[in-house]
Image (cartoon, rainbow, N blue to C red; front, side, top):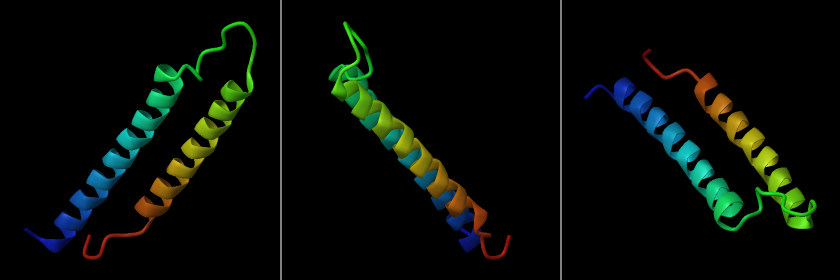
Length: 75
């Protein structure tokens, strides 16, 4: 297989796997442990979860944009 195509497929696989890992972590913490749901009142766990959620989303988007902005050699 051509090295440029292989590099492109690796970039796609990394992007998908990081996105799925991010969703898995946030779904587990938010839904399974209940930090995404506000019951009686807003608690510290809810605030920390949503701060983590926003910051990790921004970091993921920043990393993926940085990763995809670099040109692949030969394309």
